[in-house]
Image (cartoon, rainbow, N blue to C red; front, top):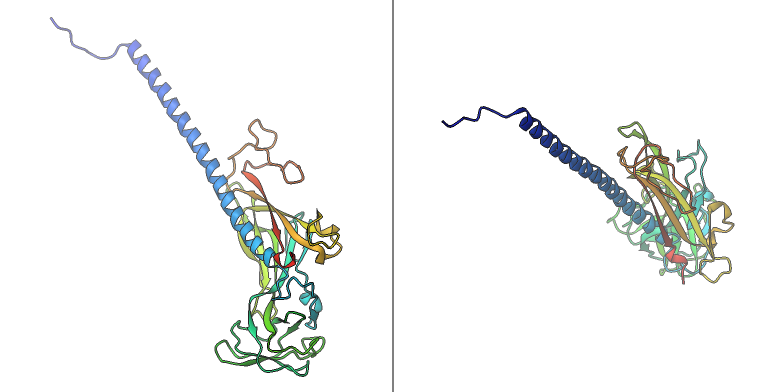
Length: 340
């Protein structure tokens, strides 16, 4: 007589449960490892993408620093009549080291600030003649959209002047118009020379890069810091814009300047802003960005067995107290308008 299977024995049941637990543990282990790897790769990808954008943006501005048309590399110092003169001083680059708390920009203490000045990418040709040198500047069309109060640079291949517009020029597309430079917004109504029809008129623009606390926090309550940008563009009336957030996750900005000590138009050394005695000797800028991801607990904190070890360019260990991934990026950008 055949016996029927009535169920599992206790031994068989225990073996099945054990095998199930082993397989479940293996699956969970694989899942946790995959999840951890995904978080690391996601943080790294975000950091690298943000760093590329930040470096590209800063690099484009640094390379154009000091541009003033055909005399950019001629070592010519523009004559400044615009008021206030400090806002119109033609320093291609100028920086501040390790700002302190309470600074006017609200920049993160201990980070650096970079200021860049140059003329606009596009220019407008003059029309008519400028005799005498206190005559108003006539341009063929206000294609750049100048308004009253804008800082303007007029330049040929031998000289340059910076002044502020004191009238309201015609709008773009309305034909020939006049840019006046009366003494109410300028220290004088006279330019340094009589410019001819070969001269060009540019907007004189300025920009500033710095790191600031956004006021936001991560899921773990840590501050979110970003790279910020302020500028004084054409059609601003000479007013500097409010700070604009460019890239999230920038924790530190450190700068060093390539200095030409012997006048041969090549970099002899790099130094911080405090060691630069003449900004006209600066030929390049070394930019160092410390980037941080948003997710906590992705890497080990400083002192733990699995701590992420990241050093800045000076060889200092960057402390990690929140488990967020960090990476340091360094690029060197030349001031093209000062190179041979």
